[in-house]
Image (tube, rainbow, N blue to C red; front, side, top):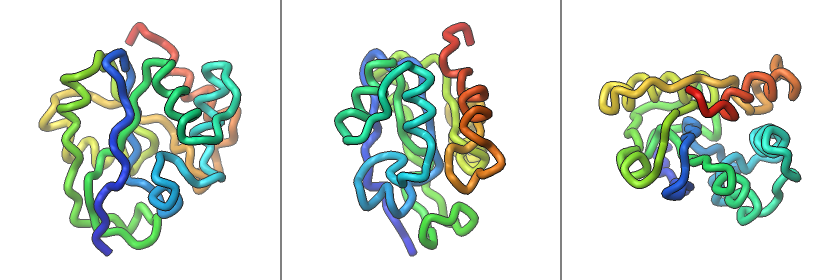
Length: 162
C-alpha cells in the first residue's frame, strides 16, 4: 500500500546531529510522531545518553531532541509498505534533506539501522556526498541488541569531534 510520510522533520537552527530512520511504523503514523511504538527503545536510549527522564509526550520528546542539538527525520518520503515491515518497502521516493541541512548546523548524520542505511546510501548519499554512520536499530525487532549494547553503540552521537 502506498503511504506518504506524515511527520514533519524535527530540527532547529542549532541542530548539529541528524538522526534518520527509514520510514515511520504503523504505530508512529497513528500517534503522529517518531518512534511511536512503546517497544522501540529509541527514546530510552536518547534519554539515558543525555541524562534525561524518559519522555512520554510529543512535547517532551521534541524538547529532548531540540535541547540536545539533535534533528530527527526519515530517509523515505513515500513508499509502498505492508504494515511496518521494512522488508516490504518498495517504490521509494526519498525525503529532501536539503532544507534541514541549509537551515541548521548539521555536522554529522547517523542512520538508525540497516534499512535506513540502505536507502540513505542509495538515494541520499549520491545527492549530498555526505557519509552517514549506521547505528544499530533501536527497534524491538533487533532483539540481539540489549539496552546496554545499544547505549554503548549510540554514544557516538555524544562526541562532537567527528
